Structures are given as structure tokens and as C-alpha cells.
Amino acid sequence: MKKSRGFLFTVFALLVAVAALAFTRTHQDEDRFLSYWVNPKKHELKLYWKDDGNSNFGSIQNLKLWLDNNKRKLVFAMNAGMYKPDGSPQGLYIENRKTLSPLDTSSGNGNFYLKPNGVFYLTTTNTAVICSTASFKDHGDIKYATQSGPMLVIGGQIHPSFKAGSANLNIRNGVGILPTGEVVFVISKVPVNFYDFAAYFKNMGCKNALYLDGFVSRAYLPEKNWGQTDGNFGVMIGVTEPK
Image (cartoon, rainbow, N blue to C red; front, side, top):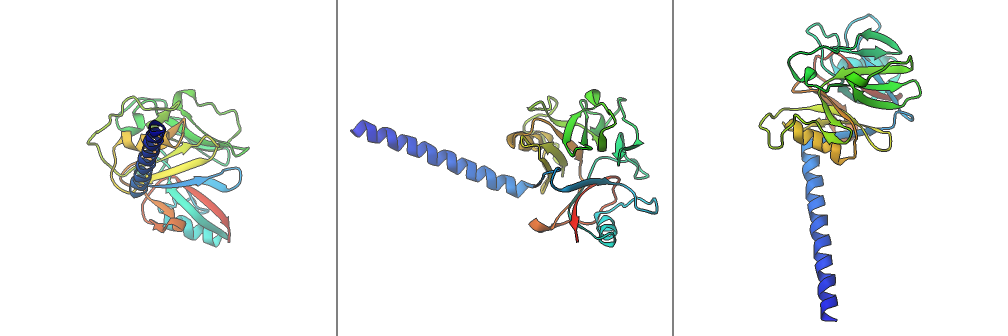
């Protein structure tokens, strides 16, 4: 009887320890990361670059005002990848099934070219996909797409170039696909390294995740009291609803 009680006490203590660890990690993650889940089949998720006058939106504030004038309420926004000095997309950009910037399969320096890099895209059936640049194919059913790099998670594994404990810290934002098919957008609240950023997506169950950009990154999510509307970007991601 005493052995049975002792065994039950040990199991209980282990469960308490695991719960405490999970609670601590959850709160640490909340301190370090802001995340937003969206179901692209139920919500209006789009990519934005230029307004009706063919001028770059540039900032989340400009996008918000333009949407207000078009009777749309912005509920979430984030910069959607790297861009050239003139604000044009670096690499592939598709908007409303039109390719406005071609796929970049070349090699070079910087995060964008840390292979494998990849593409986040949304099909005409509102299915969200992240794939490597090398495996990307457009069969005419892609509604929106943005290219960036590096991939953070590839087939459920963290990018092999990332090192745990790296001192390369920065604000970072990215996108992943959850097992449910939902899309998760994440921005770090504090500087983090690539490994920890990728691990956050992996721990959520993302089989594939893509880095979007670094210290210039901003996000707008008023439901979580996060209201960064400044910046000077190229392409942006926006989730809206009718006003």
C-alpha cells in the first residue's frame, strides 16, 4: 500500500513539474513573441503593395487609411518580405493572380539568399502554402505570393544553418502553416536569434515556416494592444473585415 502511494505521489509530482515547465515556457513565449492565427478560408487575407494611384503604401498607417476609405477595417497587418531601395519586392510577388515581380532563383549575400529560401502563397481556393523556392510551381491558381528567405522550418525541421545559442539577435517576423491549415504570423517583441525564432514555429507544429524580415519589421494587431503603424515597407500582409 505504501509503495502504491509512493508511486502515485511520484507521478503527481512529475505531472506538476511538467505543467509548471509548460506554464513557464508559455509565459516566456508571450513575453518574446506576438502571434496571430488566421483561417484563410474564412477571413479576408491579402497582400498589398500599391494604392489606386500606383504609389507604394509604404506604412501600415497608409494601408489602414486606404482601407478605411474603401470601407474595410484592418484587423491585422505586417510587412510581408524584403524589398529593394525603391520599395519594390525582392523576388516573387503575385497579386490578384498577376506576377508583378519574378521568382528570384539566383544566389547572393544576405538573409534572402540563405538557401533554402522560400515562397508563401495563397491559392484561388484560399489554401495557404509555404514551399522552398526550388520546389515552387505556378499552375495559374496562385492568387497571392511573396518570396523571402531563409526558410525557418523545412519539413518539420529547423533550418540546418541555424545554431542554438547564436548571438545574432534581432527583431524578426515570419509566417508558418499550422497543422490545421491555418496561417500563423509572428513577430518577436525582443531581439531573438534565428534558431529560437524557428523553434517557436516548430513547437506550434508548423511543418514549414518562412522568415519575412528583420529589424524593420512591424505588426498591427489592436486586439492584443499592438499598434505599430509606422514603417516604410514594400509588400504588406493585411487581414480585413467590412466596416
